[in-house]
Length: 533
Image (cartoon, rainbow, N blue to C red; front, side, top):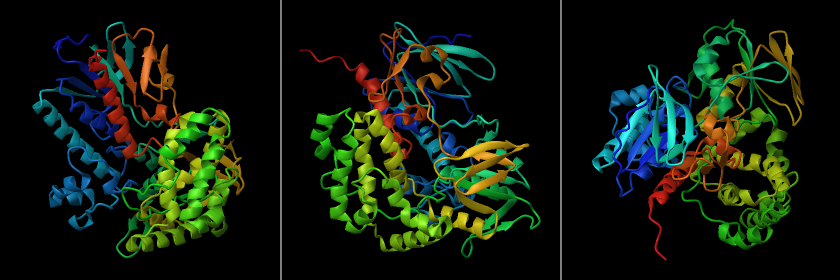
């Protein structure tokens, strides 16, 4: 079936593939266009607006987001305003009370999903009121994106038919994708989502690869199927059956939980010299040359010595080699559980006092600067950055809610959760229907393994658009996709898995807002008539 082309030729037609936060922020920016647009959002799922990280069915009510309310970029209204407009029954459904609502509160993932659903509805109404045509196409799975000389055709399938529609502009805003994988050894690595699938792992030993938020989500889901968290007075986990053989273990390279979320002011204070302006000449002179990373890190080290001399002496950030191990050394010496226990207590005390260690704020600001420098690194510098600096920055910006840490501690106190450090080199091998994982901590046997090491990267060719995959070229700087058959139409790729290959910091909602804005800007720039000379 070919969808009848009822287009108004005066309205540029835009397709957004996906309907999660990236698509919503792109739509918000597109609706600022003074020229009326015809915008179609394609979503393979029935539910529109949530994206996988916040969708019902993928997540459980117990799973927490690791972004505070004030950090969620507003769409039509802020998250806090949205929640304050909800009635008491809705708040009870969310598992929160009016007293819980605040700018620094961490909410369940499903709450953010409900927020984005409401914001998409409000945006759609606003857009139509401004003269734009906005079409929401749920249960439309896009199967191909086909560039041509005068347009780009989007092919799709619905539960009842197939179709295709030509567009002047296409934005690929597909987000996270999780699927079951098989390790080269033949061991099945189960996906952590949809969380409900983990219910089948009962009365057995489950290994969770990873110890970050994704791993915490998997542990919370498994724990919820086998018991419940009581958080009325402290945090404890109560099993459904005291005789259950259910046990689980988190397995990561260092055997550490993420840091508990610390207070920090917004906007972040800038660094004395390690900023885009301060690095501009250095980057211009040494772009693509090995050694740029060392020069940048020396400059960052000077700022850290000025701002936090104690941390600078301990971690020696000006030396790239070994920086990650020096950064984590104190927590590694304490051991994973003790480091988590003392860390969450210190973070809670600091949050109450509204105090932040200077080095934390400095590294948060530095990782934003490094985002602009990454494209200029040589292959060797990028390898060193991923090995030594990326884990440090992730430790600072990917901190998790205090409740998440306390829940992990409660599971350990109950004797159902262990935490092991595998080291840099570890092996996975089959053991009957289960698996053996061997590393620095020894050899551990599990009935099942869940791969919670985070979203894997993808290339443009890995997206399920075969025509675009053949001959398409993605430029991560402009987000544009060029194709030999594409002449007039623009194609922009804001798909998170593809961008992760180039920018490891792309996943937070603040970055997602920026991606949506840039994607929309690509579309609107292509509609702007060239200025006369």
